[in-house]
Length: 181
Image (cartoon, rainbow, N blue to C red):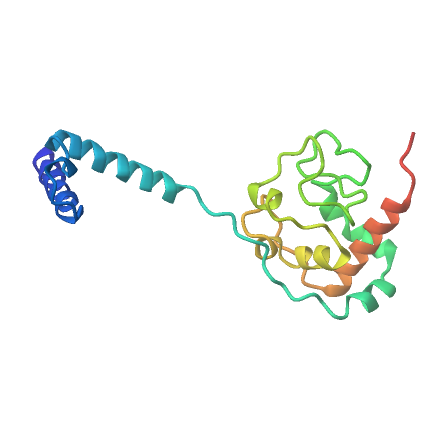
């Protein structure tokens, strides 16, 4: 294996010297060891760059044109029952409750993503630049992993549009209640 590495270093050195475009002797590395160090440093930098995943942008999920009608017909009581699956991770009080792995959803509509203090958001959420609207929450609830790839939420989504509207209406109703003293 060391022989192969040495051969690769020499080949890389020759390639660097040949491609430098400078006929001057001082353009070449002073030694094979220096060239090997340069090649190794460049390889490490490229590997480090490749290891940092790019934060994907929010997916463009077409808003549901029926959402306003679905919200108008929403059943807050059904939304309360459907919210039970959200309650495992999210509270509906002004501050995130201890023991919850997600931020509070109290007042989420109109709030910028990643803005609740004390919660460790994913890089994808922090860099998304989204301010939550009912339409964006509807798209998020459809399939969080597709709406914002790279987020931490482990939830497959809710396919029924009326169920999503019922949950949104419940969150809106709870958020409209004054916080308990």
